[in-house]
Length: 578
Ligand SMILES: CCCCCCCCCCCCC/C=C/[C@@H](O)[C@H](CO)NC(=O)CCCCCCCCCCCCCCC
Ligand SMILES: Nc1ncnc2c1ncn2[C@@H]1O[C@H](COP(=O)(O)OP(=O)(O)OP(=O)(O)O)[C@@H](O)[C@H]1O
Ligand SMILES: [Ca+2]
Image (cartoon, rainbow, N blue to C red; front, side, top):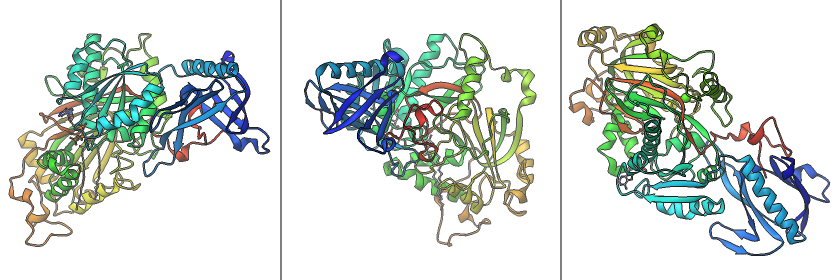
């Protein structure tokens, strides 16, 4: 480390600076100023994007002035969030001048060597998939104008594939030679990310000889990192892992080789794996919204608001049996009012628990998930009744529409998911629940809502006999408590605002909800990260830290503090370098 230390005078414009490269930081302080602290700029070496000889600019266009005495350093610079929940990253650039070429070459050599030592996960070669039809169809333009120049600056070589059909990226990852690639970059939205996720997980299990269909198998964590350049109409995974939907911020996380582990839920039916999910598995309301929205794709992202309103008005609830395996309540709770932010201690402790406490082989837990054996049947909790929605989320699932997400205290990488049960309730109550997702108000502080931190969930439909008796009693929780009132409970599967049923605000007689005209289905569908599942009865298991993203979790401005010197305590979190 000491070998990399370098200190000298350098000039920026006509001002003289004392520049120091220590192990972890590159600092420069204006000389001849009394208040030195305020004039020190400190960049963690891990956040230096590139070092170029001469006077160089790369964005919006590359301009190079080749000189003997100058070098240019590019680095991550934070800027205020512009409405996002995390900070935006920008490309900082400073041109330094030396008295002569020898010192200039010493600086570029030392800085590049320090980069190698302190950013071991920087990618050298990436496989990039661009969905040209995602979102506003700007994927290609975003990649070429923002991302490719940064990759070139950072010396990353990339193989770019513009997809021609759905599932092309997944199939490529499952079948083609991936030798030499450090990661896969997805330019698109949540649907495109899901393709990459399935490809990367599937390929890793194939190579490890593991059977994805068996929910009890400990899956092999994936070594290929995934980078997301948001270019879709819904970019929830990007938002929840970076705190912003911003291609430049995401590209910078990729080039410096940030690494964020992510929990993944495998969803199985009786016979096989159905899908993987990282954000939302939702039955009832969210399933119905997705199914309805598919009929209105032409509306673009607005289709969710339209369908959301229609489904809300249909006021449906569904009978179901939900069983869950609680996570250790001593480790964390979905109601502890904490947030999973960059450097989260709950997730770090989980890394220890998941990967270091068992075997030398680095395998997750043990080769089998013992909780699925018949011995542990007693650990499962079972509830039955009628639900407005049942949701399982492995992360907060925050998005611009809901800045704190479905479960604001959920963790990205703690090996658990949050199960949210919303029992049948009156329409005003459910509206309150939904509305609270848009603010800091606690959506779980309602009598008809429960949230549990879990390791696994099973869902099935009640047998028809049970259903009849539950229609009369209303299921597991007290009716009055849940806000329906004594007269509110119904055996039927829907109680529309427009069909004359009890509701706080009955729409005028002329209003007829389209959904009221159709017969109420007995079952809903599962929304799995924006895809409708072909099955209803499922078993879900959370696999802790199964994949890694080029990200670092949400950086919260309030949680970061400025410090000008090497800071062992907070390492790379306290680096407002301006
Ligand atoms: C009164 C305002 C209520 C606002 C309620 C906001 C709740 C928002 C919760 C968002 C949760 C997103 C979870 C992420 C899911 C993604 O993996 C997935 C793939 O992209 N997206 C969707 O399935 C897309 C699912 C989209 C669901 C949108 C639901 C919109 C509901 C609007 C209800 C309006 C009721 C108005 C009554 C007059
Ligand atoms: N070339 C292609 N043609 C058609 N579909 C594609 C292509 N490439 C990828 N897809 C599919 O398009 C779907 C949506 O893509 P993506 O998530 O990038 O965009 P989006 O605008 O956010 O989508 P949506 O609005 O449907 O959620 C993905 O599920 C992906 O499988
Ligand atoms: Ca989690």
